[in-house]
Length: 120
Image 1 (cartoon, one colour):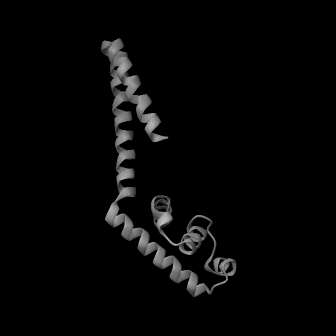
Image 2 (tube, one colour):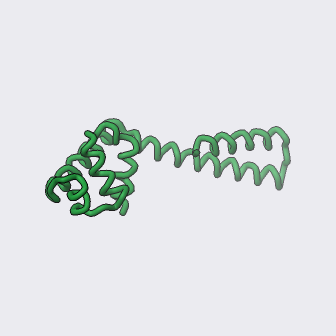
Image 3 (cartoon, helix red, strand yellow):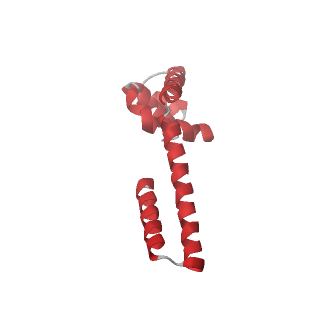
């Protein structure tokens, strides 16, 4: 299952760099959950041809990620935004219960609004 999610994410980042045929086949397999036989029927090729096309596309996607690292960087940024949001919420909670400062409250709101916007 984790491999399916990884390939789907890599398709989002690098799918346009595949040939049209490779992109169609791998999207059918990973995003539409079609079997090799179903894809072969749709594409008018053999089951083995579908499997070979999927393997080549997977290799290319993984190679592009290894070279460029866009999906890794995206995941790191999303994790960082979650940590920033969590820290801002803790600061807000501390401010509400112990020292209430309007300036601190406004700054926390700016941080939370920005992290929310960037996560969309």
